[in-house]
Image 1: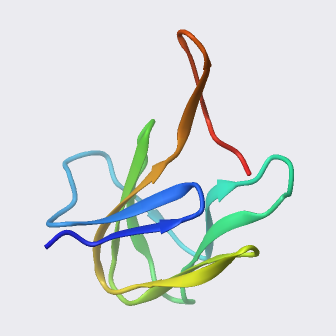
Image 2: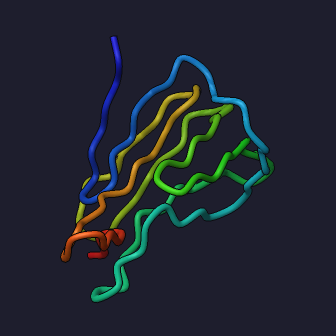
Amino acid sequence: MTIVIRQGDILIRRLEQLPQGDAQTRTGRVILAEGEATGHAHVLEIPEGVTVKWIEGTFVDTFRLPVAMTITHQEHDEVVLEPGDYAVAHQWECPLPGVARRVMD
């Protein structure tokens, strides 16, 4: 069973495993998506002393959580992710033919 979670304009999907790629590590507060008009943000709160393996992509970022973590946003309920591998996809819009841009709050 695939777990899919939506929080506003981001979509989070549980993965069987991370794809191959150049991984970085992230710590602290990671902004997944930021609102252009409101300044609100979808934020992954990484507990102190914990690092997250992260692979950044153009349309989708993937990451491995070693412990449960919370994604917060000022206008949405918190989302708690259990340990595991995830992909976060950002919503895109095409205002004109051949033009694509990430949706901003």
